[in-house]
Amino acid sequence: MEKVIRKIGLVAHDAMKKDMIEWVLWNSERLIGHKFYCTGTTGTLIKRALEEKHPDIKWDITILKSGPLGGDQQIGSRIVEGEIDYLFFFTDPMTLQPHDTDVKALTRLAGVENIVFCCNRSTADHIITSPLFTDASYERIHPDYTNYTKRFENKSIVSDALEKVMKEADKTVSGESPENENELNEGALTLK
Figure (cartoon, rainbow, N blue to C red):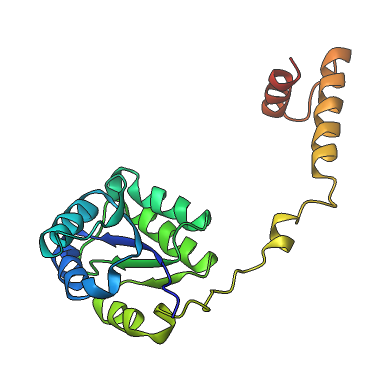
């Protein structure tokens, strides 16, 4: 049977780091050979724990910035670029996070890209023991966002904006009062 290499993101809030480390150690045999992307502190702790348990294994772990210092965005970027297809993000439901908007953005990107995503140990246990986790033929469905990315393709938004700015600029040159002084100032800066 062909060995599949999953690209796994590992993130844990402070109150959940011990739980994440225990989960990784408990499942370390299943995780050998996979590629990992981790936020700073979580990744450093996981790497140390795995190297202590399996000193002869070379773990493929990329440690990014700490979550609140940009690591969450780095994980999100890798999701969008297709470098992460599983995200195990053990969140702390009882503590308000100072970087909560980053956490929400990361959760949203996981949904947008349709990657496997979980936020607690029970779900992580089910995912890692699923036959699909080791099935080399399994590939997630990649959503088609063509309609969204081309939503302005047949619209005249650029020409309409340019026409409006040019009319306002012509009024200024001829001495007429512009409809909106702020638009004129912004337009004049653009035209220089």
